[in-house]
Length: 133
Image (cartoon, rainbow, N blue to C red):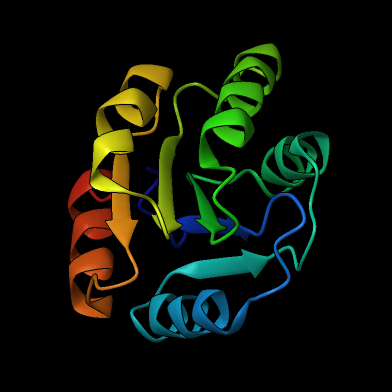
């Protein structure tokens, strides 16, 4: 992370999930903590997400997934992240993600997973720890 600019977090809602109140709350907490946050809005495709991450020069690619489609979404996104040469970015996912899928998501390449019960301070602290040198 370059010390002359804020850590940039791209927060996306992939797939057909239409619930984004939690994502907006997380975005606000990240902004309040000093991050530069861009929220993509609802129903983003994998291509939309990686294009936005590249254009924003995001340090963090954060997904909010409540639809239960986290495995196919992240499997597809991994291919695109590699294709767009964004593998060096911190990649996190949050939402309704069952504990039994966490290991599979980590194997796909997701760096950290946050359930709906995760605290905002936990998310903020983890991103700071992993991005600020």
